[in-house]
Image (cartoon, rainbow, N blue to C red):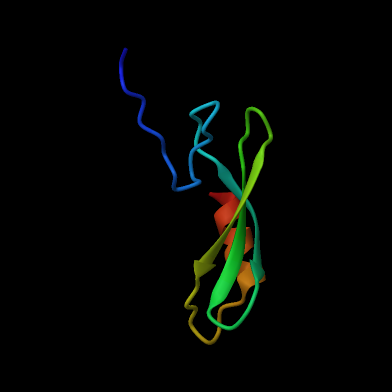
Length: 70
């Protein structure tokens, strides 16, 4: 029986093995943001809280639009 390696980063769907897309970035507290990642195949959503450092002139809405266009 082969060992299956699990990707725990949240960027790949554990069921479909497809790269997830960023659908939202929401500020939580100073220095942290919640990223919502969706699998384009099964539509499951994972929410990750990540440390977030932005330049003073960048907003999280602008960043989400930029990531959504990619």
